[in-house]
Image (tube, rainbow, N blue to C red; front, side, top):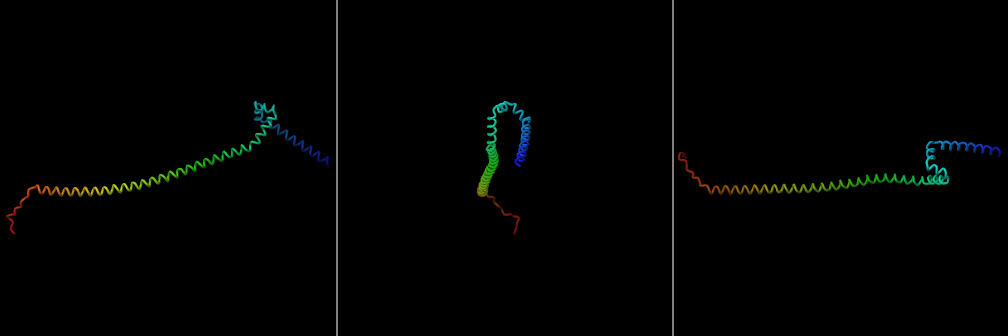
Length: 160
């Protein structure tokens, strides 16, 4: 029974080794990997495996914090856009309310001014009419005093 387990385990390990070798061959035959390995950085990492392992570990470990940071940046950008929209809405609302108050004040001022102008017009026109009627009455009296009085003679043909 022990022999049977060791033979199946060794067979499983050989199968796993074949799969791993085919995976490594497919990665090494990838055109992007070949281009990277021909670059100066790829040549350096090929000559210094400890530096390659350290860089790989650094990239793997830093992926989560960089991901959280990028997520935070995106969320803050969205919040800033929403905040700008809210601030813009508040500014427009306050500006609109201020404009409404100013226009209401101007409406009351124009109402008061038109009332004042109307009252002034009525008073001045009444005073002018009174002054001209009084002066024309005086003028007529002066003319009557200056003109000779006409004598009316009784009509001789007329008999009652």
